[in-house]
Length: 305
Ligand SMILES: Nc1ncnc2c1ncn2[C@@H]1O[C@H](COP(=O)(O)OP(=O)(O)OP(=O)(O)O)[C@@H](O)[C@H]1O
Image 1 (cartoon, rainbow, N blue to C red):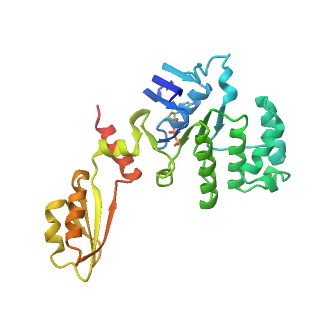
Image 2: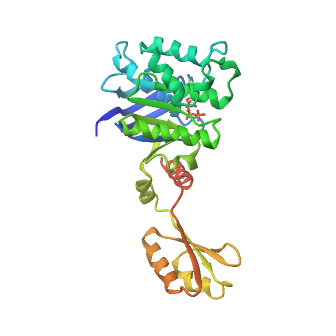
Image 3: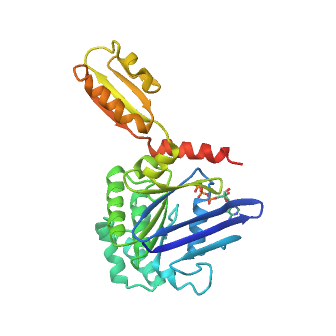
């Protein structure tokens, strides 16, 4: 894998605010990485550093092998950015807007206009942006970010304002870009929707990185319990007692219990439940969600000195 973005010991201070401190990670070609953290955690600051809009006060930032804050940052054309709040000139049409950004980037206008179709705005291309819905403006923002087939795409809360169907097609576009080797960094608060879309997650807390890994790695590190839900035929008579030694157990309703088991013991619990097949009619095993992992790593980050 080739690293497209490399951060090493990066810090950024705005007067008294330490927005980012000692952050190191690198992003590879063809990966979608979620950047998550509470408001003010430093996500946008990291993106601005990668774009070269601001300079780090410590450490180094390299994007496509160059320093983005240097005046001669030739790789800027290979970078796409969708800011958190997209604001366009409302008097221009969608087509005029994309043509404007294409010229600004020195890219062929025709190719940029084809992106309107790609984000589902083909039919609305000749309408003024002032008449667009929030979701349409967001898609125009994505089309703008895709001009010039960027090798690195930085998206700041891109799915805000998109309905579920649009969100789905938005992630389809990202998966396609990933397949072509684009690096995608996606800052978001929408943890549950990220779960199926990204393999790797970087968690920020008050300017510091508190976790970086695939969901599987984060689950292994966090050692949070897996939930095993057993649904019994008839009542719960004796069921709680038979699984009491497996972990904390909660009644869900008159037919089901949920046991929080160590990952290492889940198979044993499932086997035991299967051996009870005359009584157990359903078994559901749920690993810790990204929401739970996020809360865990924020807590453990807070616990650090
Ligand atoms: N130009 C600036 N001047 C002073 N402080 C700033 C500046 N930009 C960011 N900050 C501060 O740096 C910290 C990190 O801000 P940043 O915008 O990176 O957070 P974020 O994780 O993107 O938050 P959100 O989820 O709300 O977008 C915050 O405390 C913010 O107030």
